[in-house]
Length: 86
Image (tube, rainbow, N blue to C red; front, side):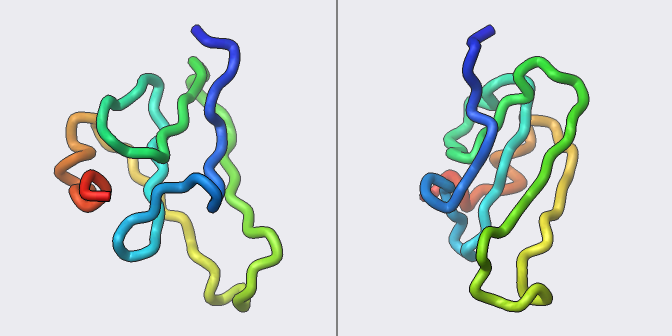
């Protein structure tokens, strides 16, 4: 297993969807689909994930609210086909 892992996404390198949102895939192995926002678990089976907004230019009520789902990697391209197009 490599020593260094991609463990964050920021606005500088995030791949945005057509609606302006981003999809972050957290998986044990590379899902082998053209999603730019893949983070590895680095072999961990549990842990903590956090989201933060630094100096947002909108009121708190307008900030995005992350949504999570557990899905089989084989279903990703059918669930989120618009990401493939970018």
